[in-house]
Amino acid sequence: MFPEQKLGYTYEEYKVTADWLLANTEHRPLIAIICGSGLGGLAEILKDQKVFSYSDIPNFPQSTVHGHAGRLVFGTLKGKSCVCMQGRFHLYEGYPIWKVTFPIRIFRLLGVETAIVTNAAGGLNEDYKVGDIMLIKDHLNMPGFAGNNPLVGPNDERFGLRFPCMSDAYDRDLRKLAKTVARDLGYSDFLKEGVYCVLGGPSFETIAECNMLKRLGADAVGMSTVHEVIVARHCGMRVFGLSLITNKAVMDYNSESKANHEEVLQTGRERASQLEEMISRLVEGIEPNNNNVC
Ligand SMILES: O=P(O)(O)O[C@@H]1C[C@H](O)[C@@H](CO)O1
Image (cartoon, rainbow, N blue to C red; front, side, top):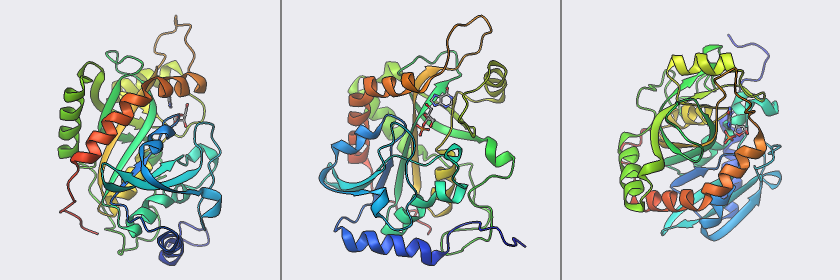
């Protein structure tokens, strides 16, 4: 049915990596945090760190994008064992989608129950400002419409179902908790909730594309996250996602603005401390996942 072309890692290949990590650290994380572009500083808040370069971990892909350090950081946050990806993988780096999402299944095999995914994104919603934090309530998977979904290929039931549900991808209770945390921290003014749309990148969107995405119901546009979320939900993890609105998508032919990666990284630096505080408090409030299906 799926001749020749390699469509993913085998269960045994995932196990090699997971077993190597289990043998090389005493941390047993229940929470994984994936840092978006320019948001790698989030990893620095972990205590009692054990750090691995991606290049030292068997089978791990390498980070190639500025703002993605390529380190896996284990540690504790508010007393909870966590693992943090300082650098994620994107389709535009040339990786097949099953490499982009490889770390998620590794985290599952390590015992992770909750994935916190973060990204930098362009704001399509006219109410959004640069520096806003958008809780992701849903997504539009554009590469998925064209058949590029990380679950394509033979399904391994040890990870999850052939046809996983995605209507509840972004955990409602965690979003509620995040809103409470943001209110307590005085962040409500720049907290939003919306729909994230993933594109393949690496070129930023045209004006016509931005207008189309907005009409389709997207509030923010980026080049990541959704693939990871699909794999995390497939294997029964709870998911919390947030986008930092690092730039406003250009929607108007009279605009002189041009999207660029430097602005994306700069906005990340400017919001770093608030994001760190918010994630810390969120992690503090996360209860063990009782709905674990994997
Ligand atoms: O990894 P994320 O989605 O945060 O990175 C975004 C999308 C591109 O990789 C890059 C564009 O500036 O930032």
